Length: 167
Image 1 (cartoon, rainbow, N blue to C red):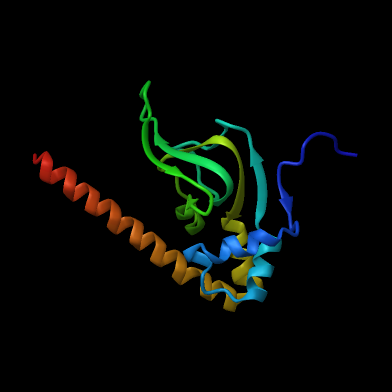
Image 2: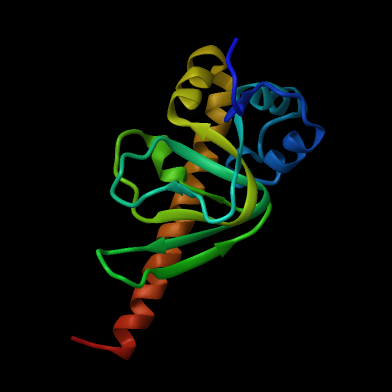
């Protein structure tokens, strides 16, 4: 018998998970049945306050949706003082670039307080695409749109910085 805490709980019934996932743009086009299927695939994990979810420059494996608590996204850049990029709250999501496959994390994610996160990983997406292709076909445009919106926002921020500090 395994002792100790359960880190991930796969397929746990939680009535709020489907509704929370429905609000994430990547999953917005899924119907009720597909959201229930997704709910059995995602991974729930509780993190302690100030626990690192992932570290910049490590391989990315998937995205997270905040069910409760809060997460800071920051850059360490080999510095004593990290640069805080975002403070995320319940309903926010992060790390979605890792769903596209191998790549390194561009930032660090760390909880501010005790948090429950819903993990959806690259192998989960591959499983959905293989076993539920229609569902996969609904998720990929949402993922593409989300990544495009975040890239446009970042480009806009960089334009603003360059306008203030031209070369």
